[in-house]
Length: 606
Image (cartoon, rainbow, N blue to C red):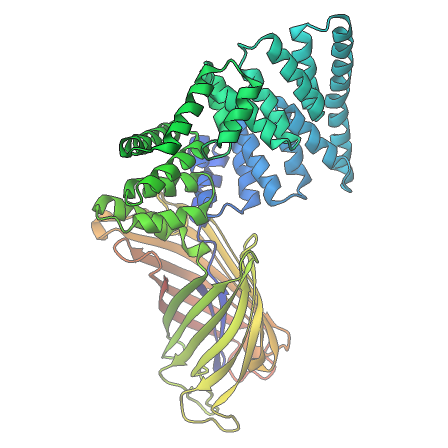
């Protein structure tokens, strides 16, 4: 989608194009307005929805985490900071926040590792804080290991001493020591099945995967439900192999459920009956639904995958897989499952899947086509100008940029101005081009393209029908307050700006900004759901070559409106402008002018 910025000056028309403002800014504006009012119940869902569509936005994720902290959701805030650190490993502040919260919520080992990493970085401020925090954690751990080791020298069969030594060692990443004493503690108290989970966890951390799986498998088939659930969460997302059952039995020879299941497995391998397969499918789907409702989404994904493999035509399972992966932040997988579910013969399932697919897929699509048009009438020139572009973009893998092919149209109905020195009012051209544009970052975006301007009118004196056209620059757009389409009326502010190089205008570099501040009116249901804004324009412009037509200041009232029945990208605007040239050398016109401009903006993305 592209935002237009138009300068109607002197004998000609100059057009600058910039990318449209952040498509999620309405939700962000609502979230930050709610924060200012301490309305966290409104802000949190808005942040969550933004991150569902744009999970890579670190600044938004951090603000979401701080908001969760204000509501006391410490663990949820911790996970958001963890994701921020994953996306931006050099963000020391986010890493410190995560580490403090990890320590506060019992993840001492992970907190210690993060503080240890930060205290070795070049950031002096973060390094000092991390050093103090690391020492505050590490010294008590060292002392605890020393104290409990001494206790075991006196009493080698002390269960509590083995357990405490294992816990202190695990928090200090001394995996072998921790695994050794978790096993010794379990041997002394075999009914404590959770110790097998602890043992499996540290063995997995030190890379002893087969031994870890044996301990976890033994715990998962025990009589302690909580330990069994924890063990299943750490096991691979597949059914155990025969040799894994045998290793688990070697570790835990008195485990009758483990022996019984191995016997069933060996029997099933010799003769599998259809009835048992159907029962397995039902169990997997039931377990998936239970895990989903309980918030164990990783488990739910595994169970839904098993159910899908057994019944590939169950569209309900496909839809649930889409939502599960969406919640887990794996939107590429989610889009794939939504697309499959959209083929369902059940209308409700297909419509829900289609809506989710349309919402999630555009940023992930390898190819994307956008079209926009902006016809605008100017009272000053008594002319109708038309601007349009169709652009097909290709995503460059994980690179934050897209290459594109585009064709622009710039034209008007009169073509030439009147008076003693008539000049062309627009380029009257089609401009095919190849370009590249970056993703938006804090409202900024770089773009560049190379093409050819093909004039569709009679050939101008001294110019060929086609000529090279190179353009590019930096675009910026931001908005705040109650923008058009907001659920409630109020003040708003919008700004957009461009610094653009244009070979077609004597290799000039032009700076132009549009600024609007005003009031968004309440929606008027009696007028067909009319949405409208009243505002004041302040639009300065300048250029590097100091040409009179580019150095202007325009200001005056305006309004934008649309009806709810129209697409959200269809907007009518009317502006009443007073303009003044800030540089008049070579200007054949009066230094001041009035202009009424009325236009319709429309855009479409596929």
